[in-house]
Length: 419
Image (cartoon, rainbow, N blue to C red; front, side):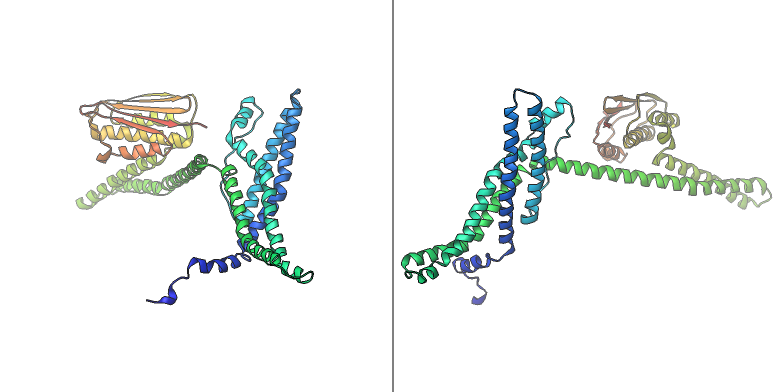
């Protein structure tokens, strides 16, 4: 066993730790934090108390209390920002600020601001800081000034009537004070940071709200980027590969019509190549249409769904009740849900009829697709239903499937479309 590797007991390390704390950066940053708090706290607190007193003094009027209240809220917000920057500069304490409601000149907005805890928590901290700031700064200043002064007590006694026990007691007390000053300073600063974290920062619920807001913005940017990429692919396919395939099919058709003296095998190969090129062109057009139909962008959901219903192999009764267009991503999701559902109905369900209803009610776009097929649709069966549900959830919508054996199959979706 290596005895030299055994750490020394804590009581032996304590003096070294106490001495080392005297010149550590954290100690002096904490001291500067308390000193600046001792100035900013009482100044800000005095202004707020003065404004509150002004509001009460002018209760017989209407204008004075309103102006004083408004000024108090503005001052409280400015002081909260200054205090947050002070904590960040000296203590490295950074936390998200609670989102503040937008202030307008409507009575309801003003009442919402006055009722909100987000308004009064910074106000409470500023009032507390007006008392705690000078108190903490005074305690720290006393520890850092009186401690060294008491250390010099024997020197003062030697220059006077002589060194007595009282001088050595003062010297010992001064040593304890000097060694304890860093920890007192840090403790007072930590207590201030704890109060500021609770009153100036966001609480757990508000942090979750901020996180949800950030994730929503991130999701929206991702959806927009994917939509832009889809449009680029559509444009490249339409202007590039589709045009070349069209030219190829036309050239093969011309060759097939003019070269009538080819051997039978060659003529057969040419005819097969011509038909294959036309089929590939049809598949490519379907692919481009499935990416993002131009009619959806130009004329909206009603026209795009009308085109889907017209192309469907089974008869579709379509009803669209919309008095305005909704967000582009919501239109795209609604289009793909209807298109994919009708494709599934034609390919897998054996349906003979289908009905599609689309209605815009307030800030919700409701979709209902019904077919008279055999039913028994399973999202895990590989028919794309799970992908449809994921598309709906990507815009915070709801997706519901009802498909008993024997039918009918009903898909209902609600998409939020608030501006």
